[in-house]
Image (cartoon, rainbow, N blue to C red; front, side):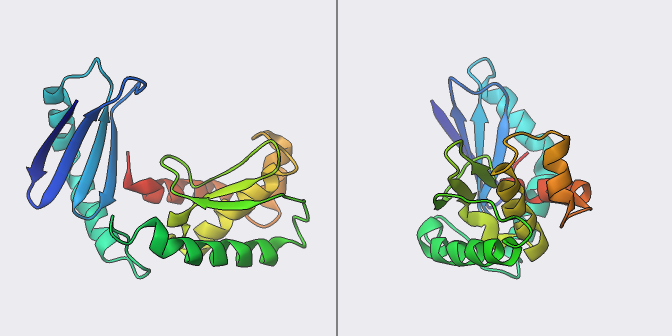
Length: 185
């Protein structure tokens, strides 16, 4: 079930999802917001929720449209930026390989919906192509975070000791990263 409405010039798409446990708001482009709705939430409740988030939507849409790096839209999303993301990730891995010399199998660049990156149990690294839109230090933090998972597959104290070797300010970086997280709440 889907509904749609306009918020000034921003198209808001409401979509019910059986697995959804909470309302999720994502700014896809400066002109499109997608809202995922659990089945127990009405479209009217979701509409009201969106109206409570208009300040965030306008602020984030403005930030996205004025990004000093390349903008992404549905027309020039993954395909246009996958190569840029692969080059960026490869250069970051190379930059930090002396500190984090952990073997990995493959590096994938994908259109991840809820993560900046992940590390699989078979040591494949997965990254969101939207890393190219982050400030350089945040993109480096994301890649290093996943490199550390090659040695520690958890977020325990040993993992954070590894991260701290190059990012002693990781707590501030994580907080900053949440401001960019897929332009979603």
